[in-house]
Image (cartoon, rainbow, N blue to C red):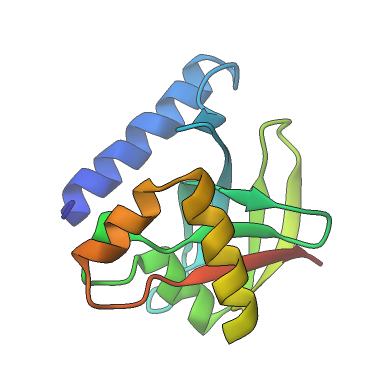
Length: 142
């Protein structure tokens, strides 16, 4: 499983690629659109940014997956959203939008998880690495 240092380094490099290329490279990862998510740190209260893939989007919400590469721990951004669901995202067009995070109910989770692993089986491999159920998070524009 990736360490905190590895994840932070990857995120730093990804933000650097976006900045250096002025957004021409880095907004699609593993055939998925990416977003820059800004949450409020649950302990520090400081703004925290991470770039995440979005394996599914529709007119109602953007779906992100709290897989952390199949680690047994939830990602910090997910824990931050549980503490404070208000966040912002920036998309490939550079548009910043306020969003609210929520969790799908059981039926919705099953349906969405099926859609995610059908198109991106890597997430199923992540689920097999961990005992925790990998959370799905819905980001709805506010």
